[in-house]
Length: 157
Image 1 (cartoon, one colour):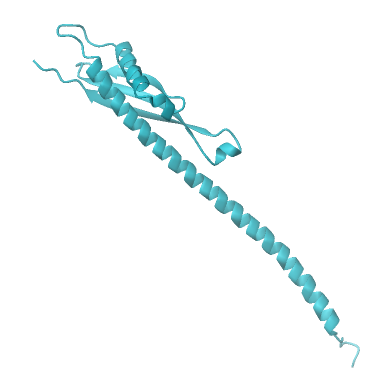
Image 2 (tube, one colour):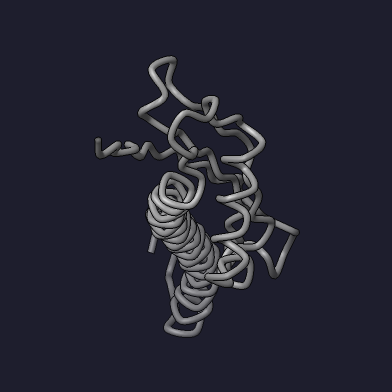
């Protein structure tokens, strides 16, 4: 055997192989933990978006019902002046209280109401908070959801 040749014994080979596998195993663990955290964050975002979508649809349904109830309950008497926004808000709030909508939607409130210049279309605007289920464990995560609906008043003569 010459100077430049080196004899590798089986013990040296096993030791070197063991060191390389231990180093790769540590890198694989970091890679797996990173991928799991990315998948969990993606799942949290998808669940949160779904919750906000469902809450907005439910709030729109409540706004439709509140606008219809306000149109039916707040119809002016024949020959009376046009409805006011306060009457529309009061009728919408009365419906929401009777339907117990405040239990289904945290922070539910009537944020606006209007009536068209001709006095035939009522608009009701609602606002509520959607709680994000996964993020709420880490921080108080809520998203404001709004809905607007219109109802027409029919006048029979």
